[in-house]
Length: 163
Length: 424
Ligand code: SF4
Ligand code: SF4
Image 1 (cartoon, rainbow over the protein chains, first blue to last red):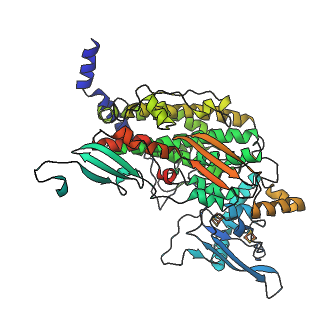
Image 2 (cartoon, each protein chain N blue to C red):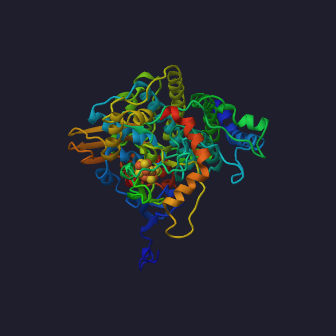
Image 3 (cartoon, rainbow over the protein chains, first blue to last red):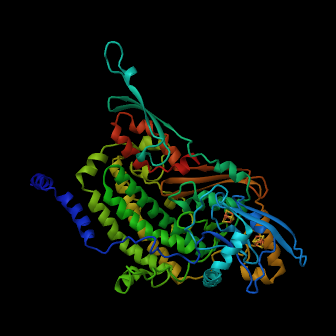
């Protein structure tokens, strides 16, 4: 008897029909996909994307050229030169380069920075068109910081309790 | 081909290259196969095309710097690799993370196991001709990657475990979908249904639902005649062979040996959670498939238990030993001593007492171990990583010779190879 039922089951392709039934049900369920460039998946406040250098609210740059981020970077992606600033003799960076091709987006630079200057923003859609554009310089980083300060600050505030 | 026919017109065996650029090779695997018609006589894996010298690289960096590189070994089971590495450091330094950190690690090891097995079931089924499973598996992967992102900030290379605990506590709020032209009102509410509460609520909802999702995969594959024809009696590994070839993880359990480091040498909090070790009987691809599917269910069970504990017991997730772990950011800004620790730790790291140790975890693919020698400096003297995939791949001649060419694809799938860890 068992063999007969087995045979019938096999002949009627029951297990294949069961599988097809699963896929058929999904045909009528709401789609899981998003229309990407127009809408994106949600992004965590901890997201580690493109770098930026921040400023204090009074417009002064935060970075004090302590070079902690340079020391902690496992990929050796950060290069810093520093000198006393001509106007007031404060210790500032004269060069702050990040090589985005070397960077592994580990977040250690942000973790180490004592004045919350270097941060990883939640921006992930960026590209380079020419060789050399992968090295982003201090003015570019500061511009990134100025442009996205609001979202950077909001994300940091939300996560402050955990850091 | 011309050389394989000699003067008398007889066909001799010929040699064929499989990969390194083959869609079914799961990365950059090159197999040199000696074939007799469609039957394989001998198969010779060539590895090293993805060699990045991680072990050597680790020797030149303070201990913590290499955590991020561990993610990139087996890049579908990221946190498990980190776990082995930070455990080795912890054993040498002699620190124990707080309990909550251990529970978080247990939780994320299991999340990682599901991530890995989903990748495996999807790609294995895709290689053998079943497209739908791949799409469904990646949908669930997406949901778990959101969890990865919520805690660590990246969807894959987390750099989340640290010697002495984990970097940050679990977030109280889960990330939510935003309104758009296509998703609003009720639709948006449905998409965010699990995301109303904390990350733990989300994981709980996921783990409960996941069992049904596994039912679906099984519906698609377990009884399917095509799937069975491609996997039953393919690549049989006897228990003795499995021992002799150094197999671990599902490869070993598929042959019926109940060996699981989570049970036999419990680490983190595995001694306190309740789960079973699924084992196979026959040692073929189909049994290993059943073992892995069952492991996904068990991981779901463990996740629920961890979520339960973590919800009830808040607490620190990092030790307060400023020689190893940095102080809190707030303290650093106010206390001179904390600032000194901060600078010391981030510039030269910490020194580890001289000695050697071996720490292994049950990674989704098998035993992932880290053997570390320290000479007392702030960098390891030597790091050796025991990758399960390497031991498995080296047995491919024993298991696959005598099979047909299409079975090689089934075997690569069942080995669950990832070249990040094989080549390191
Ligand atoms: S994210 Fe990591 S790798 Fe990238 S610049 Fe910062 S420290 Fe270096
Ligand atoms: S970005 Fe921060 S860590 Fe880096 S040099 Fe400037 S102040 Fe120091």
